[in-house]
Image (cartoon, rainbow, N blue to C red; front, side, top):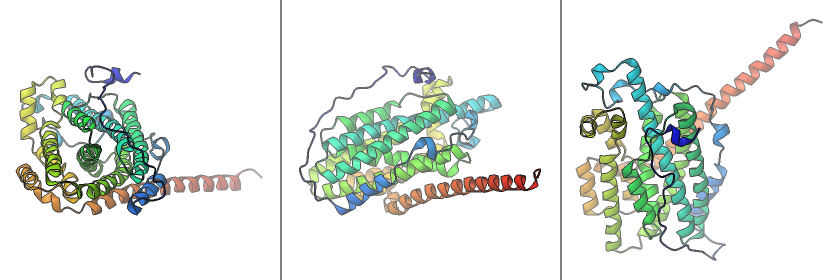
Length: 370
């Protein structure tokens, strides 16, 4: 079935063309590189995996409760519409929210793949090119996995959110080589990581938990890469150049906080846009969710050296300033550990099944006819 047939509404043109700017840079220095980045490149090679085999696609998913979302987390909960909804209606609402979330993940991962490829092209240092090449493969795998989940398990997709598309376009159109790092790996992927983590840590459904845990294991390396590269580069910039990048971060953070709320879902179900926006604004769950979305972005922005007065004031206004003190290294280490624990549990269960099969065969042979 064509993907277009699964969209909640017509996504428009089948492709989106973003004019490329900036120079492709070659390096003739092949012998040396930053030790930290080369170690990360080696880890990127060692940690490649196949989404077709590492994830257990045989796990059943109820598309009307794919994530185990509680009633209180649904934007319509407690509104006049909620009281009129049947159990079937609520299941359909859950299906649409799961489709919206994972569709934005899918579109974002395609954007990350394009940005990683752009970094390979434009970054001046070969060690960064090497690592970005492994990240490009990671992002392709993530897009493949999210697309398969939506096609096979949910049966519904949403077009890319207009504001996510706008931020992605701004990131790709900028001719400065560091902007794909800043726009994608710090802002968009930082936001996605927080969203992945909230779902991963709250869902009781094994397939989406597997998908998000394994994707986040890769993303922990990507964030580390962006931090290393930008921290080194931003030490060399003038105050004016740093302020330009801080303005980009401020605008992007407000855009993501105010516009990535899933209002499209409620509109698609027949609720007027103004009313849908009001429900989104007043939802206690979404207010907490919006705040936690910055748990990965704020400490990363501070770490790479973008921490001017105006940026700090913006984070105070958003109510997320204190997140600048979060231990980003600890969060990333936990992301990797959770994926490894899932692997250990799954392999232990598979090993136990194999042992039981062998023991059963031995027992059957021992008690069979002489």
